[in-house]
Length: 168
Image (cartoon, rainbow, N blue to C red; front, side, top):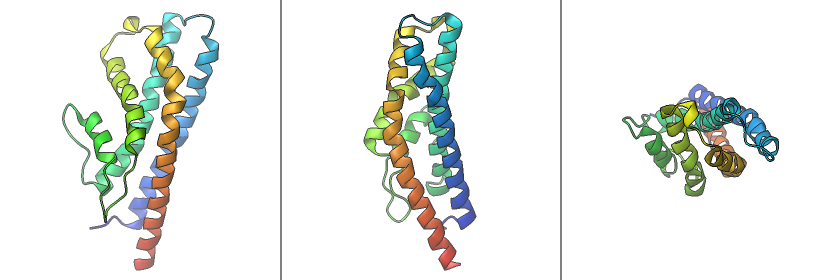
């Protein structure tokens, strides 16, 4: 059974909210490059920057996770569900939905997904600036294709809600 209009609108509104969260998070991340160009952050600053990188990926993942239960049936389960989520959202499901993300956009998120896992598993004193700095430098570049794909997918959701509205 196809999702009803309120469900489609709720998914779209949630994705838009997650995208706004990503924009706020990236505004902070973007400021880290210039701020720490001449010196590495101290441990507390480094932990804060790493936290924002973690939040960046989580906000993107939240947007993706809104789609899957409604248009795929369920969020993947198990230890590798984060990776499987990225694999599911690149699939074209004819008659159900187009891909949420392109393969390239999903690939661009891969290192951020791995960092999210490492961040949750390590102690703050284990963080190193160079790997974090590389993610800071690449966050905006990783986001742009994702943002483009999500906007395209939002257009699909909006159109699908209109079709449901006309059928009712």
